[in-house]
Amino acid sequence: MNRQLLPSSFASKAFQHPFFRSLHDEIDRAFDRFTEGSMLDTPLIKADVTPALDVSETDDAIEITAEIPGVKESDLDVSVTGNTLVLKGEKSTESERSEKNYHLIERQYGSFRRQVPLGFAPDDKDIKATFADGVLTLNIKKPAEIAATTKKIKIAHA
Image 1 (cartoon, one colour):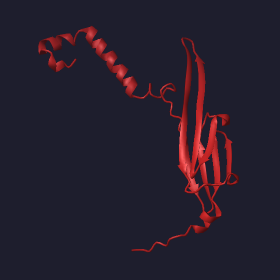
Image 2: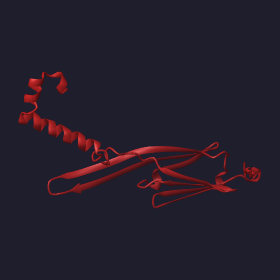
Image 3: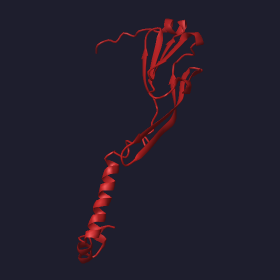
Image 4: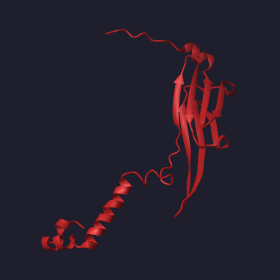
């Protein structure tokens, strides 16, 4: 309740009472813990599993690297639909800790879907994929007609 809405004599006496002061302090600590991030950083709340992607291009290929720690190869689905590469997967982890006064089991799960426009429809034989240590690497060879039509444009100084 806003202190300014209360009569000043009541507000000054009520908020100095040990019960109200203690309650006010406890509420402040609860909000501080929440906003400091300690609660937000727990695996139960932080469940973003969207992989970070690095995309690089050469004259004849596109290389895509996706960081997907904790995802098993069997939970990954990599496909091409038309001119678009589609990465889908599910992550599921569980950890358990026991200490003197508590037993904690945390679970994190979630799914992701990333689409990368390629600008061409690659042949199946022109895509090489490897997955090791939570990193998916895709090397997609450009079709010959796409690689041949790429032209450099000279930039003149103004």
